Image (tube, rainbow, N blue to C red; front, side):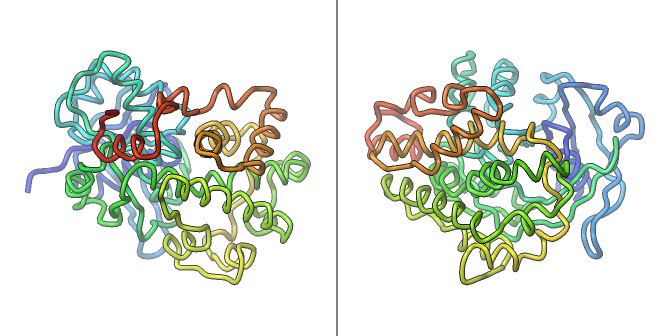
Length: 367
């Protein structure tokens, strides 16, 4: 078998872990980061040292190309793994547009909500006419951290992660392309399903904002999911979750509840969300964000909550809980996350009926 070639875009906690793991699985890996200084030690050492709990992937993952040149990174591989906050997806699509070629696959890890739609629109708006398949994962496959400039640690690899291409008629092709490295990815139906099953939208912003006093006074020195999810906080999360499931229903989609997702991703259960979260061993030991200037707000509010709420408003669903969290995040950060976020207007979807938006995600055409 020929060595598979991958390019990983982004050298943060997730990107370093993915690049090292892919290398250890035998792939020919390129790693791109916008700021070269951030990856200079990886280039000097020739790779990334990966650690994991007992039985997990570990060792020195050799990285064949380490670069801040986007054209060089795009040219390296057929499969391009974008492992960056979703707030950067538009910038990457804009930068990559001139260099993408027919047959390449771009996978967003994760897409958050409507990430593949945004990436494709920006790519096309910036002159890319190549036959490129953009896909998105529903959530990030790893729980991981960068331990140093050329070190990464994987705490957990999720057992099943839905993935969908735009259009969904290409799902099987994308899954086959990555199956050797990532058999954990499963058919996510389409990007409406992956986007509306976005659990980060439910867990991250509200859990951060409802504990903002604790975060600011302790600089995040408490267990985010365990200490932060009290019964009252869990009730707010459950309201947001019901709104998300109802928005999905308005589009003809039966979205998983957060309890069903916890069972799928972590094989953990509970009578309610409070109990299920506290029954998830992987959540123990995870500290809260050290500051409110964190991607759980500046990424997950505009790129996760806003698009779900925007779809809800467009198709007649009450999303008052989501609107409250969006407004709270906007107040804290002194910005307008509605304006900055992925609204149906910004994505060019505002005129589509339910049947038309369904046809778009399945076949990639508006009419």
